[in-house]
Length: 447
Image (cartoon, rainbow, N blue to C red; front, side):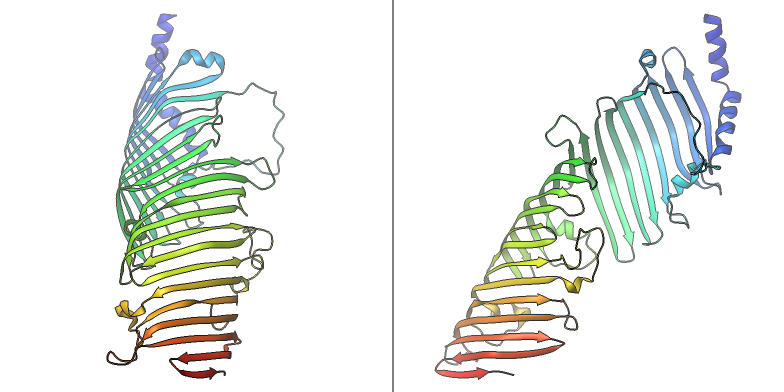
């Protein structure tokens, strides 16, 4: 018996066995696998591979691994369990890209050369007991992933990547942590980099919300827990996410220029159909700066149900004054059933907004160049459809007042009141029921 094991071990560790195994696999896939060396211990259940390489049909490397080390608990095989005590992938390089047909080059390289016809019936096979997979220690060390998206002309480069994890298919549990030392993104509209990005994810079916995800980027954190039910006709979700963000660092990743710094915190929850969720949003912004203002405080309370957005309260307090907004956006005309498919363009959405001003001093905004300094208060109520003059049909009621208005620095301070109804349709603006009072003088507005 011992001599047989020794003989088998010598053969299984030979280059001829390795070549024979590789040559049996490569003709079945579109790419090609190369392995420089290997060592297998039958007694300990340990396999070490060196110089592993996966190439595409043109000979270009997609995956390169300096070392693959796997330890398997052999007694567990008797219980139909593949128990991986440790799996280590070290010095890994992945070069991912879209192929001309839109597929991922990695998927294309490992695709079968002669896939089974989808119309042919599989042969009848006897029912066999299922196998369980358990991984105690997964490590991905010193890894670099480069992903090129052809259509978007975007390249994502993650260097110094480390992944650790564990999981048990039988218990349906898993835990994964990925740390990226340096992340770089390049596209025609954006070039951005970040260091020390950490992503943690776990699944525990016994938890109140089985899915938990945490993302940390410098001093930005997003913590989410969720429950996803896939047994219904439409997937259903119950999720809650807590945000704590440095806006300057987050908005650096937004292609459009946004002049805003400060810290935002809050929570977002989602329940129901994934394609038509019920959302609640509670956010606050502290010491925000931007657009010529400093020390702004922002508070938002809102939500969405049945494709109808409800802004219950949005309050912005800053040195210029205080602005409060409430309103709604009804997108049911655009998405009658769910967000899966639009039946009309966005200009069919209906909206309503109520803006209230309190002690606003617009002259404190230098870029506005407001000609009539004073303290303004009152409000504007707007409702309609369309978001550009060519598509807009809207009505507005304006009720504004101003105290201490001066047309010139040495001029007399007067009080001003403006009330008017405005209609906009077919790119035509109609003013009716308007009146402007300045001091003791009044003016009726229409046209």
